[in-house]
Structure formats: structure tokens, C-alpha cells
Length: 485
Image (cartoon, rainbow, N blue to C red; front, side, top):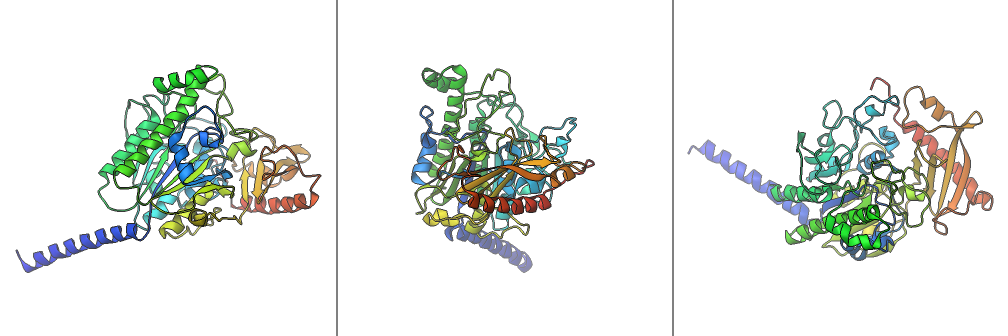
């Protein structure tokens, strides 16, 4: 062997050793593994730890009991696509141009089939990759209309090293889905139920993961979104406690998610990955509102007494379960009413991992202090602008204990529902005024039953002025779609 060859081999061995030591030191220095569980249409009252008297969710409940249970946790939108975009980017989804549900690639007069998470948006996995993380998405994507199509950026563009996903729902249902795509290749028919299939894939990825890097794993369940399909044994277990088989199917569906969560947590414990793993569990929005699928005469998700449901800007539209548990670490343990949003996950993970925040303006705030010692008071108001709301008020904002809602009005008439903002209708939005306000003290009245506009004029005037300022800023940064995009 020549001296040059020997030196080259020695250099490669040294380089590999340095990389290995760096990866190990990152874990030892505190960089946690991260698992984010995101359910689809799981209501505020659908877990036993959040008050459901029938559905058994022992694994998720244990997370809440041994970690942090948040009573005032909010999704980024009251519907799936913008909610997911907000979680990934830490920004109001309106700024990314995702205002509403994204349909698949088909002719649409409202042009929603053009909508997608745009190039240039910074995301959680993209940020974490800059500090050595390996990343994976398993489950539902729903951030682009042209799924698995190079005409629009796919999960890998936004930082996922590995992805196993569907565009929207598992099809034809949660049972034996046929529409999963693995890293751009169709996976074909798969036997089983979606939430268990997704967890199987997550464990397979972890088993095959060759590096020692910390990981970010985003597990996006399809359940309990309609159309519902659940294991027969679980349905039979709940049938005596349900009003009908459809309700038993729903109860079993949520219970099956709990079993899937338990399987992955047990895997982490048995494979030495639970000594430093941060787990976040939440939902993309409130429970289904409409019986839109064959055989669904009504929906069975529960709001925990909150007003409205999915697609509403009242509390049940976007107040959802929020649980955090840092496995293997001594952190705050208890229930908190701190106001936290899915928008806050990105800056929190950046702080905990040492990743830099995006250079674009984000709307979330780090709640790392809540995880460490139970203390967090958000400074930024939370604002939602959902132009296709089923209730009358399209705009809502929470600041402190108070929430204010408003309708959009132009030339004496209230605006009709809109899916998105395109060239041609953006002036309609921008020239409209906020009107017909409602004000609630959510600390005392989370059911939004007592409108305080008249009874508390001082707070109302302050909240109205703040809402106008925040909404104006949101409009200025919102993406307007060109009809040629």
C-alpha cells in the first residue's frame, strides 16, 4: 500500500470518527429526538384526559399525566391544509397563500387546485436539518394540490429526508388504503388500518436509520377524519356504550389512534430512544362539522362544550388537545392554561435544538420556558382569518384572556364566503371593514356565551384597535394568488 493511499484511508477513518463523535455529542449535549403526533379532526373533547366519558385513551392520557396538558392550545386554522402549513412554518398560513382546504388536481372554478405551500417557506424539518437532524414524515401531507407531482414542491423539498404519505384522506378509507406514496413511488395497496400502518412505517424508518443523528419524526394520522373505518374488535367493545354502530366506529377509531401512539412510545422505550425524546401530541382542527361522506349520517366528534366545530372561528374550530412530554428529562409536569399555538412549535424546537430561526418573520413564540418550568405568557396576539367560515365571523383574535371576532363588510353588505385570495378579489378583501364585533373573556367564559362588547367598553375598544392593527399587518403579508400560477 502506498503512503498516499494509507494517508487517504486514515483521513477517511478520522473524518468518519469526527462525524460520529459530533452526532453523539449533539445527543449528549441535550439535542432531543422529536416526535410530533398530529391527528385529523380530533375534537377538544375526544380524549378521556380531556373529558370524554366513553373513549379509552390510556396511552395519550399517560402522556398528559406525566407531561404537560394544555387546556388552551390552538391550531393554526380551523381546517386541515392551512393548519398543517402553520404548524410547519410557524407563520400564519395566509402568508403562505394557504387559506383553506386544498382539493386534488381537478378543474375548479375557484382555482383552489393551484394552491400549495410555496418554495422559499422555511419549515421545522428544514431548520432542524441545519443542526444535524434526520427527518421523516409518515401519514397525511395535504400541503399541495398536485401531490407527488414535480410541478409543485413535495415533502422532501421542505426538509423531509424520508416521506411516506397521502395527499389527503387514506383511500378508500382507513382500512386497507391504496394511496400511500413512499419517497415519490406509489406504495400500492396495504393491509391494515391507517394509523397502525403509519406507525409501522415510522418504526421501520427508525430501524433502518443508519446515522446516529437526532431525529425529527412527524406522525400525521388520518384518524378520526371521515370516512371512518375501525377494527372489528374495538367496534364490538364500544357498541354497548354507543347509540349506534356509526358512533361505535368513531369511538373505536380514536381508541385505535391511542393504541398506535402507545406502540410507537413502547418502541422508543424498548430501543433506547426514550431517554431524550420530546413528544408533542395535538390535532389539526376541531371535530368534523358536515356529514359529507357516504354512510355518514352525522359526526360524533365532541367539542368539550366549546362553541362551533371544524370550519368555525369560534373556540371549537381551533382549540384542540395539546400535550407535551419530554421523555427521560425532568421538566414541568402538570396542567396549564397558558395560551399556546401550533405556530409556536417551530420557534420552540429551534430554541431547544440550537437551530436558527428562519430569516422570514414568524408568528409563533417559543414556549420552551413552559416545558422547563411551567411558565409562559405569550406576547403576540393569535389571529385567524378564515374567509370560508361556517359561522358569520371570518376574523378572530385572542390576546390574553380575551377573544374578539369580526365580520367583513363592504358598502353596507357583509362579504360572502371565499376559499382563497386571487388577483381580482383581493381588493374586495382589502377594502372591506371589520364590523359586527363580539368580545369574550375566555378565562371565565370559554363557551363564548356572554358578548362583552356593551358591558366592557374599555376592553372592547382596546381589543378592537389591536385587531385592526394585526389584521392590517396580516393582509399586507398575505400571499395573493395569480390566476396563471
